[in-house]
Structures are given as structure tokens and as C-alpha cells.
Length: 462
Length: 87
Image (cartoon, rainbow over all chains, first blue to last red; front, side, top):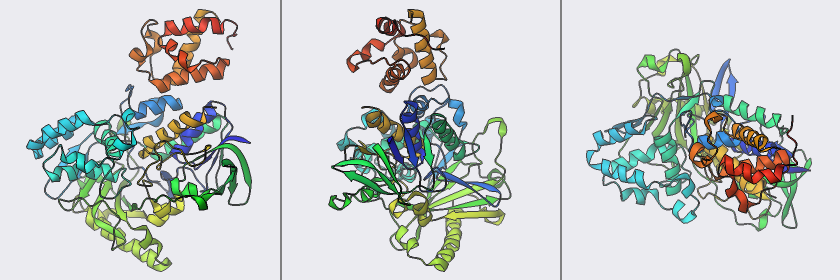
């Protein structure tokens, strides 16, 4: 009998597992996939290391910072700042056809960029900064769910600046089409514009390996290839889970990072429940390995968020497999790694909104052809905003919404989960809880904070 | 434990929670909140570490007693006088 079973060995499940194991619970993390990480994982292909998920660790604050999610999670998980080897970004860009705004981990730069490009809007920007919600003010669901677009209209008279500010924040963590919850907006605004972006030289694997090593050292059990097919419910309580192979495991409590609708579907009593909507926003991402560093092409930006008109469309592509109008170009080379360390290859990753249903409906050969076609179309779209890299590609890989679905088991390959978050992490059952994207925070740091806070609130109290 | 040993134990816990902090300059009479910016989650962790390490139960209404090193030691002294320091 376990004290707690955790479904999913992603960032949130591992972080929760460390908390529980540290305080002497018997914990088992069950992961369907053959490796850990969930949305943020890594693999080796043709002798090269690839990352999926992580472009940048958001919420970056320098060593010695005592406030904010990164400082909190280091304390809660008993890590040193140096353990994650976070190197800050060189600088990123919001690129629209007529205006470009630069930003770095120093919030002053974005402010001065706004003052340069939108001189009559900078007072509104200062007012907005004063009225952003802080992390500990997000508990009120009514405030959280206010429309970010409506609130931004109170601060800015130029709609172009609103579109530009929203673009990176939606790209890095908005599960809702068109608009954004004001609470989510405040989280992402702090995480990206006021704190900042960073990355370990070794990528997400470094962070994941630290988490797993710690979890195991504390006596936690991690079982891979152990998908949960059923959550066993008796008399209105969870008593355990059943695995894909039929094995049953008893537990006093279950914490699921599988997603809200996905978790409810696993419950024995699911037929009586109202099904909340799963998220719809999914991505393709291509990874281009280059024979030279992006800087040698004149590209020194860490992340470029591009959009090819004055209006930013954040929605599932209705009529095609992907939407080439907006995208993200990430260059993992363009971080300030210690001692001028460099990645072995030049890498560009390009992400684009995609329609899960359309990708899923393709047969094997049509799927392969579509991947080739969209690799080219996504690259062609990106080179309108970054130097043309296409003739320097020596290797590549690509994932689609169906890949995300296969590795995360989230419906529709939804990257940021359901639009309606369960901020309190509770379900219809008293001893079944949620963490991860459908609980609230997104991003690597946010996911870990989610696992920690739900563990603290419900699982460490008897 | 003597008051000195209790103080050392609290330092161990703080070092565990915040390994990046330099605790050698800690002033016993100044609240942790001011010196280390500890928040409610950190105070809860001090309570939980005491429970884990020494089976000391601190009721929620007493959490305020843990505001500074001096008040923490004063509060714990009668409760930990029979506790042996490990190792």
C-alpha cells in the first residue's frame, strides 16, 4: 500500500514525488512512456542530443534572488541555484512586420523598446506594471478568469502593442484561443518579461536527471512503461489504480498529472461525470541542425516570436494542418553559457500552431509527406524574420500533434492543457488530486511549483 | 537538547531549506522573514522538518513563535529538553 501514487513522471509529478518522499511517504510514480519528462523530454538520434518541449526555462532569476517561483522551488526541493546550471538568454525579439521589440532578462530593455516604438503608450505600460497581480494574488478564480484583452485595452490605445505583448505570452503558456485569462497573463508576464529566460547547456535532461536522482535517493519508486488504465473507485474514494497490464496497485491517495479530462476518464465512476473540455492548441516543431552556429549567420537572438500581420491569431488552425502566420524560432546556442561553452552543433527550432484532428486523420504515407511539406513551409515562414538557414541544414527532426499525444497522452496533443484550470487541484473524489498543466502554472518552473503546491496542500497533511 | 543545540539544529534545517544562504551572519533577534525573506511555505517546512527529525508537533496557532531564531529557541526549549541530538 502506497501513501501516494503519482500518475506521470513529468516535471510536476517528479517535484511532487520529491516533496512526499522527503517527508517519508511511500510514493510511486507511474509513467506510461519509456522515459521521463512528459511534455519536456529528450532523446538521442543519429548521435545527437535533442530536446522536446523546453525552449527556455522561464521564471529565471539570478543567484541570490529570494523571491519568485524559482527561488521557492529550489527551497522546497532542497536544490542549490547552481544545480540547474541556468545560463541566461542573450536576448529575444517580438517580430511583427512593421515593428520589432527586443527584450532580455533586464526588464528595462523592453520598457525602453516600447518607449522607442510606441512613445505614447509607455505610461500605460508603467501603469500596467503597477497593477499586475502577484503570484500570491492568483487564488481568486473570478479575477483569474477576467479577459486579458479587455484589461489591456484599459492601458493601451494602440492595438498593435497589445498584440505584440500578448504574442510571446500566449505562445509560452496560453491554453485558451484568442484571449487569455488575466491571471495566466500575469503569470506569463512575470515569468517572461520581468523574470526571464535561461537554459542549462545540457538542456532539459540536466534538470530531469537531478529530479529523478533526488526522488530515488529519498526512497521514491519510479516505474516506467507502467501506464494507468483505470483509477479504482470504491464508495466515493480512490483505492488504487490498475495498469495497462492488469496489475492493481493500492494507494491511500492519487495525484494525477495526466490532465483533468484524461484523469476523470480513468475513474471507475466516470460515466456519471460531466466531461470538461480538453485543450485544443497543439504544435508542430521542427529542429534543424546546422553546419554552423546561428551567430555565424548573423542570428544572435535566443527566441524570436514572429507574426506576419498587425493582428495576432492564437487559435487552432481551422482549414489546414498548421498555421504559418505566426511561430517561434528558438536558438539554444544563443544563451550566455559559462566559460563561453558552446553546443556541439548549431540548432534552430521552429514551432507553429497545428490542428491535431487533421494530423491524426492522415494515413501513414500522407503523414510522412505532410511532415516534409510542413517542414519546408514552417522554415519558409520563419526566414521572413530570421536569416535564411536552410542551405546549412545537416540533420533534422520534427514532431507533430500526434507525437505529443503519443508521448504525453494528453487529448488533442494539447500542450498547455485545458482552457479552464482547476486551480485548487481538487476533483470529485476526496483523495484524488491534479497537478501539472491542468492545475494552473505552465512552463518548467511552473509545472514543478504546481506539483509542490498540491503536494503541500493536500498530500502532506493528514 | 540545550538551547545551543536547538539553535544549531534550526541552523541545520535552514541550511537544508536554503542552501544558498550564508547563515553565519544570522542575527538571532531579527525575524527570519526580514533577514532571509522566508515565506509561509518556508515556515511550514521548518515545522515539518522538526516533526520529521524529532517527532515534535507544533500546532498551527504556535507558528508565530518561530518568527526569529531567539523566539524559536525559547519556544522549543521546554519541548526539546528530552530530545537527544543525533550523531
